[in-house]
Length: 323
Image (cartoon, rainbow, N blue to C red):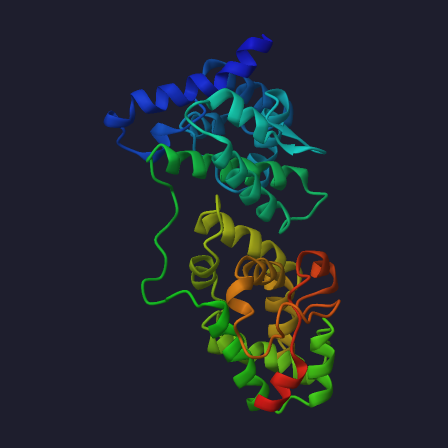
């Protein structure tokens, strides 16, 4: 039985390679297709009390981002040793079972992608963490096998922004909303205050960057294309963000700046932090940031990101001079 568990991934990968030429739909080329996986899937449906009619969907390897499916993937992962609530996704298993198809470089890339994804999720929500780790692995392995992905088409009229472009928008909006210089000092220490001036700065920058409108709220299609999150198609990204946006929905009497700050910014801030961290080399080229050798202890993003952004410090004097 243990051997079956350890060999299901390798057998499934070989099956995917052999059937690649006859693949019609992406779902038919799913990585996990062994008997052990299918049996475990059926057992988990019964154990979790999921409507058995959904098995027909799961047997086609279609896993929509709803709560039942997320917990199903966690159950399967625990049973087949590719997920642990404490240790996370078993990346070492991928290298062992898929060798020589994947190498240490792919393993590291996968580990980094999964880590970035899980940092955006509730650390106590093990169902969603297992689900998105699984999706990240599935997407990257599909790319390796040239099987494509199920990512929905992005908005063709929107072009992703660079980190420098976003920073330029922030500087322009600071002028537009007459942001007091005292708040610039706070920003340089990683303090983003919930006050009228900063709320309007966030709203202005989000609108200017085409991430948000007062009428439609967060433009999730544009945001998905901008972030291009690994292993997360538009439907999954939309569900994740909407869960947060709904939790933080503001009253209809709320002013536009407050609504943008307390709903849009609260939910999208972790994704933007990851984006700036990923593009830190480009960020450091912007005049509002100090030279990497003259850094401060705090970053412009958040105190929780300090350990990851030792060289990410706002150059207060440069910003004041351009303000």
